[in-house]
Image 1 (cartoon, helix red, strand yellow):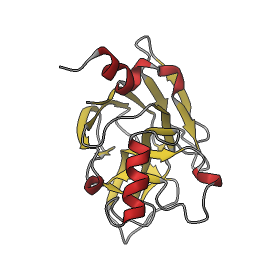
Image 2 (cartoon, helix red, strand yellow; image 1 turned 90 degrees about the horizontal axis):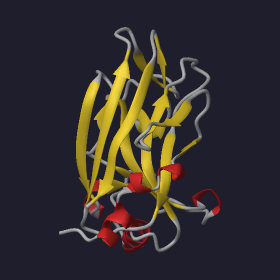
Image 3 (cartoon, rainbow, N blue to C red; image 1 turned 120 degrees about the vertical axis):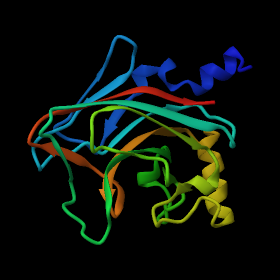
Length: 203
């Protein structure tokens, strides 16, 4: 049984005011009555939703991250990659879990181990409805900037475990992208779309 202390440190919706959009323009972030973050996607190709993250207080390596989203969109809505079409890669516009060490922008020149994306665990944004995934917080399920697994080297593994455990202050959340990239943002055309995160919990 999970203790109250464990729940307080792993249920991210317990501190909803920490949710923030980064590297995103023309989009709206609101919190519903349950404190769940909801994003309205921009409809201008010059704007995009890229990162939604929250403060992370740490979890033990080996737990699993559970994500559930509610996707609402008008029937004619099309999701587009902010960086434009990439015919050499066929990953559809998607949302996937992401984690980082705070300050990666001003960290070491080689920051390839300070950010990690869920590799196989992601939700393609191709239809409306409720979608859930479970992603183990283990290094074989997470990839870095260059596509390397978190267990590909001692340095990568050390950074991954530090971030999961929040040894340096860390953030965790979602990124939006597709094609050849995990991120770099999405916008919509032909209609409107809103995504609500109804579950985001490590247990």
